[in-house]
Amino acid sequence: MKNKMRDLRTNNNWSQADLADRLDVSRQTVNAIETGKYDPSLPLAFKIAALFKAHIEDIFLPN
Amino acid sequence: MSQVDKFTKKTLRKYWIELGSAMLLYMVILSGALLILKDIEGLWLRSLIALTPMIPIVFATIAIYRHVLRMDELQRLQALRIIAVSAAGTAVLSIGYGFLEIAGLPQLSMMVVWPVMAALWVLQTLYGALMTAVTHEK
Image 1 (cartoon, rainbow over the protein chains, first blue to last red):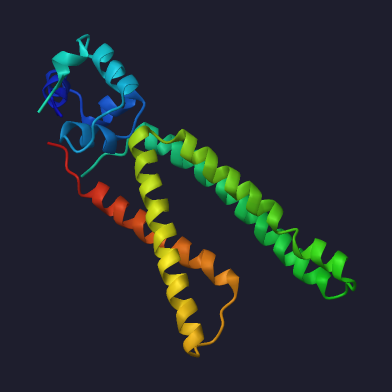
Image 2 (tube, rainbow over the protein chains, first blue to last red; image 1 turned 90 degrees about the horizontal axis):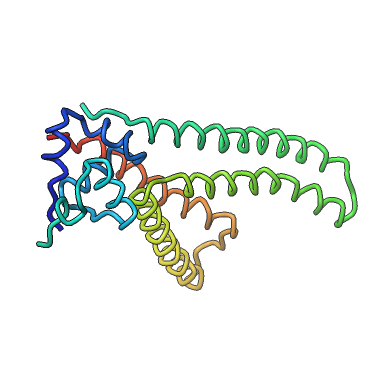
């Protein structure tokens, strides 16, 4: 699944570690989601959407 | 260089405290049990004392279980993969060696099985940690 997480993060001037701290996950998980190697669970996707004040479908896009 | 996030620091710190305490207790109880066993007779009492190191082993198991619960979802998925591969690898090696025993190789104790699984577990964990260290932030 594609996503706009990296763009949203860099727009906020956050490092992956900063975003990981805000989501209460590891930096490795943020990296894996950004690079499309891992698709987050629905609860984590909602958390990401809430953090960026966006809808899930605006961040995560089908391939 | 990759930054270490607070989540990983926090979870690993708790894990090492819990697991480290259990392993320290294990060494103390094991040393005590080995010392006491020299002067004890009677199968039941000896068996009971010989099993006392299992108490901190149970604590270590609980520490590992608690660590898995504290992991994030990707880490938990990776841990599951590692355990599955370790179990499968141990099955292959133990069954393979079982056939070699039929061929004449020396019989090994059941105590060998766990170190084999642990070694496979550690190797995969180190490989995972290495891969994480080389994932650069873009």
